[in-house]
Amino acid sequence: MGEVKVIKIEQSVLADNEQTAQAIREQMNLQGTLFLNFMSSPGSGKTTTLVTLINHLKDRMRIGVMDVDIESTEDAQKVADRTGVEALQIHNGGLCHIDADMVSRTLLHYDTKDLDLLILENIGNLVCPAEFDTGAHKNVMILSVPEGDDKPLKYPLMFQVSDVVLINKIDTLEYFNFDLALAKERIVRLNPDVRIFPVSAKTGEGFEAFTEWILDQRRERAMKE
Image 1 (cartoon, rainbow, N blue to C red):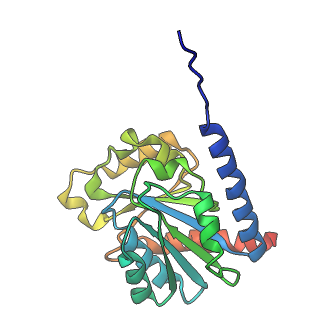
Image 2 (tube, rainbow, N blue to C red):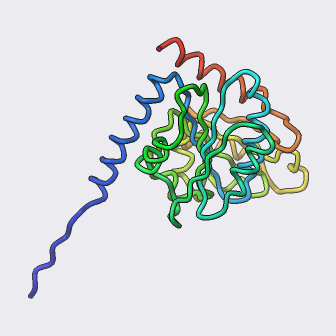
């Protein structure tokens, strides 16, 4: 019988990614920039959430945005037009994720040294983005009410790697069979340390608490500089 060789490359690939991610965090720490990675499924209201968030913060923080998509500049343009902040579009070549190496190469073309907050709008997907460290300080995941309260059961890793979960579109709760208390219970069961903020990107409800969390994170990093 012929010999079959098995070569395991996942560990080394992910190890390289972790090293690059840590280098990005060190760069952000030296700059005093808080780096947040936003993840969600398509249609969760991620771009609208960022617009609402940035408009709450832009008078208190210098903010930059990196937007990831397979094609088009629609989301980055929407953020720039509706907030006035600089937004950079990243085309990831059709992949279902962005990793630390892609972020590192992007940062060669994006001057972030004077930013207080850098936001990465990750590609819409509940599987691949959860597997790759982007170099962000914190992961923020958006779960929208129309998606259902069972998403933590179906995509546990996404909720396990997230530091914050925004439950978006709470203005539609009366129209969908979404149990807010049950959703929170399922998320906390997967990740006891997670912070959960029910919000509405459409009305702005709930954003005060989330923006205060961001400001606290930035203050904590400033104290360490």
